Length: 213
Image (cartoon, rainbow, N blue to C red):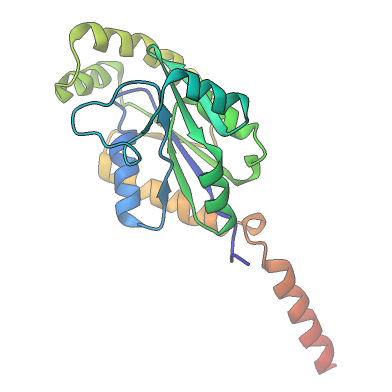
């Protein structure tokens, strides 16, 4: 039996608030944390690999998987579908491994309402300011002004759901936020209800105590 149930670590933020960087740092800190590779109907970008960055599938196949209950969560974002395959996540948590999700509030809500809800640890990242958020998006050099405008319009919709998360961090210093993120994960791993072996251990102690009396 696994020493504890694996966590479903949900990391959400508006685009540009640092969740991808922090997700990478979290996995560098603990390589046993598995990343949930999402399925998507959008075409691969240059350098992206199927099965590593995303599972690239056609829309009919994606819809079939949703209908079959094979997606833990899914959403329609900027004209494409994204979703988290259920089977590998369930297998990982049952073996005591944590799984990291880089998803939006809609996906987080679906996971919180799923059969795996008791394993969820949700964390939302806030930017220090809206001008700083836009500056970070522009600094990437990946998107044109029209796409950045669209992401900025969507950012407040994301931010407005901050209070649905277990923890909220203001990412005004990447190193400080990283340290706080690690502290949260370490503490959540030690919660009593995440350690299924505790009851058996206490019963063992009780038996040993009774043997001494």
